[in-house]
Amino acid sequence: MINRVVLVGRLTRDPELRVSQSNVAVANFNLAVNRPFTGKDGERGADFINIICFRKIAENVNQYVKKGSLVGIDGRIQTRNYENKEGQRVYVTEVIAESVQFLEPKGSGNNQQDKNAYGHSRMQQQPNQTTGQAKVYEENPFKDNSGPVNVNDDDLPF
Image 1 (cartoon, helix red, strand yellow):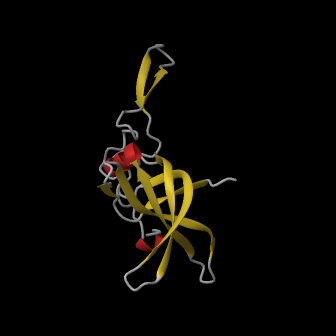
Image 2 (tube, rainbow, N blue to C red):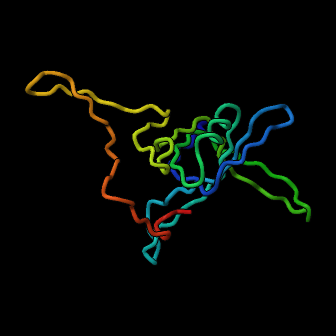
Image 3 (cartoon, rainbow, N blue to C red):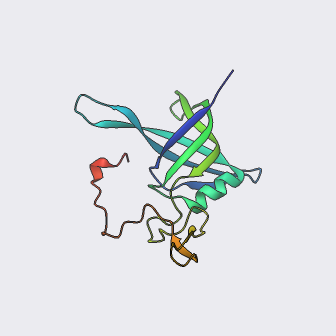
């Protein structure tokens, strides 16, 4: 049997970190994942998926991502149920993340565009054609010097 989930989406809220009774770090957050089709009104819908992660992954998620961050999740689906205060059976489906990939540079919203997800600058050396000496160039294909990018709230999945 196979139970495997791979998702790419944006956090709809900051992760919530707590520690279990057995001293295990647990983080949970919601991930907005765009649907691959548009509805009758031409709008693209999104699914909002509950994600849970444990231990070091939970600590890293809490430290390095926030609402709006783009992440990749590899994990499995889990369903559970419980009885609420009104005596009704409630079923919950969530993804248990076994791996979380940070898909945007650390601090991408804080003008630290020259850093990768681990906080290191990415530099590239290219030899000068006339002198033969290496010249260092900053490698940042996403840096846009033309000013801020205007994003309409209706374009965001959260």
